[in-house]
Length: 317
Length: 57
Image 1 (cartoon, rainbow over the protein chains, first blue to last red):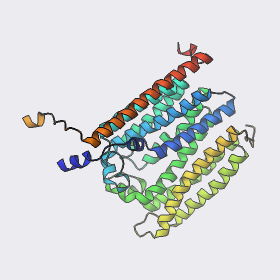
Image 2: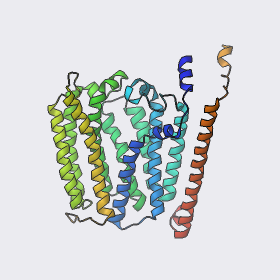
Image 3: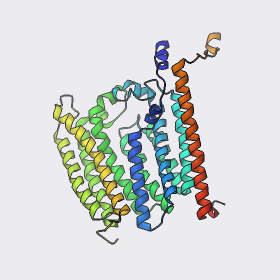
Image 4: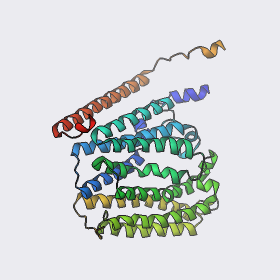
């Protein structure tokens, strides 16, 4: 214990450590999808937000995401220290004390919700508060270590940003906002399970019941395909409501096809199995990376159509 | 038992530790300043455009 304390005293935290505590890569995706919701809401309803208020609302979403990330790292620091992939995170590496991470998470939660309320309205602020609670408490503390459905139910937390962005502009959340929510919700399981096929031994080591640990890699690959089969039609719903136009349609159909092809190849592969060859591992990695590109492209298309006035809907619903 | 209740001694920081603390304090100060500026900006815009004033009162 003395040795551990001594080793953790040697490293002093830098600004980068605090930034890493906020999971900046997840934050980028959260901000991007939140911004897409904001831009689409403005274009679809004709309600315009002051540009500075919109920038502050976007900052609030980023801070809220960072707050949830810090709370997650505070709670999971025990298992993060055991898993190789996460052992260099700010808390297990000894750079940031646990209690400081929690304090940062809680203070940023309050600041982000307050900023959102000041810059937009109470509904957007309440949704932001709920999404932080969803990720920090419902997913991290209740679901992650309790059920293999952790990713499926927990995926709701990451799906809120476009809804929050929409609410920030209009003060309500119509069907289009929930369609954007559904796209991220159904995208999360195939995205995360592709990664967990590569890291399931690590999760088993810390007794986190990720699907490949509890049901095996074959069942996980099948579930990836099933969720991708659900995701592709859901991604086409914006075409039916008029939220998505020609550009969005081309992206959703083209990349949706590629995503499905990846899922089919994964089902036929041995990715994640103990005897998996290099090709299986490479395929799971490629599927994971492609899933990120897919979501960025879908929401990028929404943003492009609505921000650059290239929105030509296929239907008039 | 008496030892367990004794507070752990506060070790003096070395030069690197002091530098790190100064850096952290600077970042905290900047963050606090940015927050104050943001609240001020929001207030000015709200007063200027007249939005969100009546519904909050």
